[in-house]
Amino acid sequence: MREETKMGIDIYMRWDGMTEDDRDKQRTPFDATVGDVGYLREAYHGSPYATKYLVEEAFEDGAGDVHIPAKELRKRLPLTKDIVIQRAKEVYKEELTEDDAVVKAFEDFVKLGEALEEEGKKPTVYASW
Image (cartoon, rainbow, N blue to C red; front, side, top):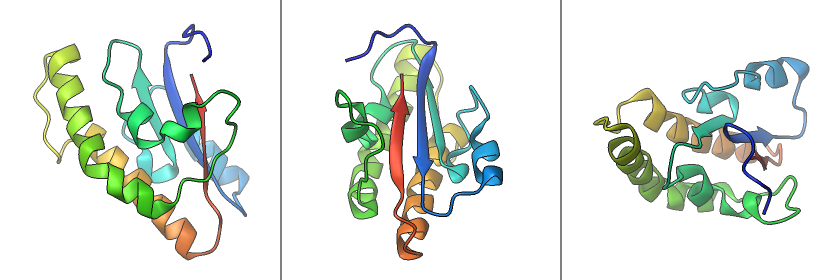
């Protein structure tokens, strides 16, 4: 596993036919609310980490871009949202609900993966940490 020298975890979704505009939308460092563009963010302030559960395959040594079927992401989503809420409470002393933007980002990320798969664009996930 890589050394945790960066300030956080960045997850990027990539797909066939991805445009420069699509990539630009993902260049929103530290914004944990833009899952709809294929970007997720968690800071290294303490575990548990929802990203490490949702896209665990992307954290394997040398993983690079990995395809995680949208059905699998959808299956993991309920526990992922619970982890986001639990982490906010434990690490940041914040009370979140499923309606909060940080939680919804994970839902939006999964929805994007589903839409891209349906369109035949072969989404993959890349973790930078």
